[in-house]
Each structure stands twice: as C-alpha cells, then as structure tokens.
Image (cartoon, rainbow, N blue to C red; front, side, top):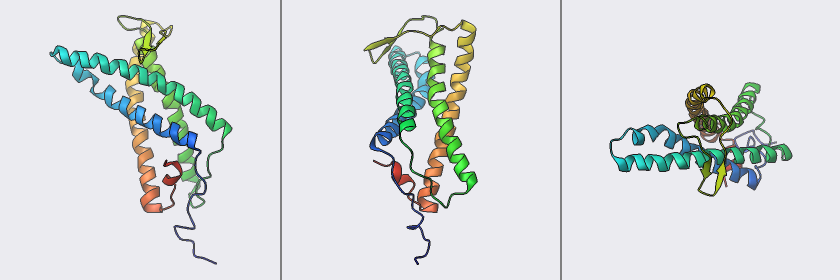
Length: 191
C-alpha cells in the first residue's frame, strides 16, 4: 500500500472543454470590465477632449462586454445543469467544501447581478436609448424609474467591489491548492 502523498490526493477528473472555455472567457471579460470600470472616471473627468472620447469608447465596450457576460453566464448555468463538475479532493474539510460551493454560487449571482445593475443604471441615464452591443445588435433599456436607476448605480459599484473581492478569494484558493495542498485542483480548469 502506497503512502498518501500529494499524488494520492490529486483531484480526479477535469472540467469539460466547453466549461473551461466559458470559465476563462468570462474571467478575461470580467477582469477587463472591472479595470475599465475602475478607470472610467479618469477619462470622463479629463479636460482633454481626446481622453473624453476614449472614455466614450471604453463605456461602449464596457456595456457590450457586460451584456455579453449575462449571455455567457446563462450558457454556463445551462451547461452546468447538464454536466456534473469533477468531485472536490477527498482531503478537503467540510468547511472548505462549503466555502468552495458558496464562492461558486456567489460568482454566478455576481455574474448576473453586476451587469444587470449596470443595464438598469444606463436605462435611466440622461439620454436613454438602446445599447448597441459591439455595434451589431440593439438592446433596449430596462423599464426602471430614475429612483431605481440611481439605486442600481450605487449597487453596480458595490457589486463591482464584491466581484473584485471574490476574484481575489478565488485566485487565493487556487494558489493555496496548487502550491500548499499540491492537489492539482487548478489543473482541472487549465486548457
């Protein structure tokens, strides 16, 4: 009988190729959108018209990518419902398992709530009009009042910070599993 070392504790199975692509595509878009959202004020507050023009480009891309995240998340949820995820490593405590599941659930909530709150916020702006997604498709504004739009605007910022904190937690957990637990959990989601 072999000793239970890191090789014996490896996580079995991998996510499907579709799940991996959806994960990384969503991750790149969300991180890019967070960066764009956090720097946007610098462009619009600038006295330089070229910077303001860049700000308009960034906000257009930010909106398009946010609406794309909604679509990708709905596809991810549908895929997840039809395909079981690989089991968590046996050495994880019940607390770690609960935290992993709670974090993934929180991600799904944020992946929908964050862009929907942005969509609601832009639906009550100074010039309410359909949003052109990458200049291809028009998405109509949501039927929300100015008061709700302001609430969604505040919520959008808070949800953005919550998303950033959840990403940091998720990456920290991946680093822990890769370098401390050495259970190859990260390998299940790598292309």
